[in-house]
Length: 178
Image (cartoon, rainbow, N blue to C red; front, side):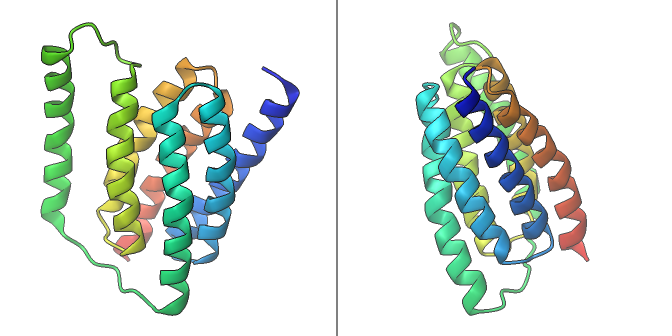
């Protein structure tokens, strides 16, 4: 791993921690830190041939801009739809079992997991912008998948950041229930 990649991954990770802590506190400045973090990670993911993760990061930059605008122009109340939690939890094993049946040659760290993270990340970001409380559950799934795929591709800061995001997502779930 080159020094430049190491440094960029470290900066993006630190910005990512700032992002999720500020979002957990419902602070709009978190979107700016997230935009910078995702822009750096997009470049790193494309460089590492993680095209779905790179796409997620580009979409997160765009969604971050939208989130920044939305959170700055109005106060959005937190909404909760508890049935969404059950839907998300049910979708995971169905996706995994479906993958093993229809694509038996894929392994756990395949591009398919990367694609699941892409879909869940898009939905989670939409829910975050609209302040739907159940987005935290989706982020737990996305961060778990991202940790596995990043680690298997030797993006250790990115994998570590995903583990930290997982923990801070638990904190965010608590904060948004207040």
